[in-house]
Amino acid sequence: MPDKGTKKKVTRVEGGETSSAARETRTFVASDESKAKAKKFRIFAILSWIVAIGLEVVAILQLKSPPIKTWLLIVLIVADLVFAVIGSLLWKKANRFDPASEKDKFRFFVQNQLGAIIAVIAFLPLVLLIFTNKDLKGKQKGLVGAVAVIAMLIAGFVGVDFNPPSIEEYAEQTAQVESLTGQNHVYWTKSGTKYHVLADCQHINTKKTDEIFEGTVAQARELKNISELCKTCAERWKKEKGLPAGTAAAIEEQLTE
Image 1 (cartoon, rainbow, N blue to C red):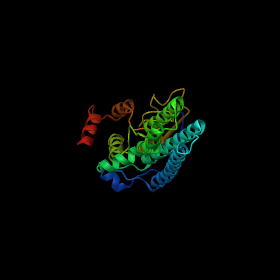
Image 2 (image 1 turned 30 degrees about the vertical axis):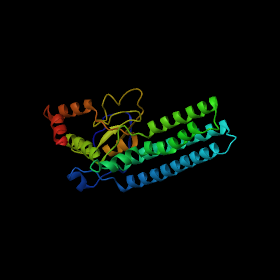
Image 3 (image 1 turned 90 degrees about the horizontal axis):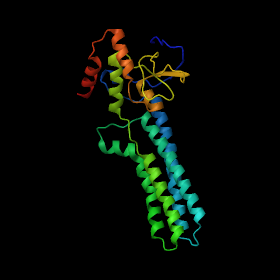
Image 4 (image 1 turned 180 degrees about the horizontal axis):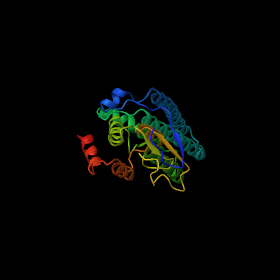
């Protein structure tokens, strides 16, 4: 266990270790615990999406059963949005615990952008029917249509993963830390955007920090979606351990080959 070198409370995150064979070949294999968590999140995400699509169906039936109640349509659309967003957030969290491989580009795209795809399915048919429905007139069509379009855009935006995790990325980030420090061990905070190899790094030992977490690189990504190493830590580590100035750059170059 490394010297923590900080007066802050340090909490060890359990689990998340990869096999020795995976470390030797610089591949990432999600732990059984992580896979189990991913499975749970995906089940709840799918259930949430089913409810969202079910609400869309109810809204479509309402459109085909005049007189059309504006307030009911809006309630159904908002509820549809809520469940679509919940499903997307849970699905993206699951992907951080059990990421896809970039080698299979189709699966990688579908798995990471499924939330956006579901958003289209859960709203586009309804939007089209609203604007082509002859029983909706003037302001009523404009109001309901605007709410549906905005809901679809919000659901789609939330569903897109702009920083999708991958097996290859996890492996590279883990190898970077291990090449620098000799072990897969990092620190992070609740509101941090980078993981650190030094617990006493100035960026996590601030007045606002009341707790520092420690664990593997994968856990930093799984729990907080942190995917970048603190450069200050890397430079300090090199100086303290007497490593060559180009060590970090050499590591980066080696990982990208």
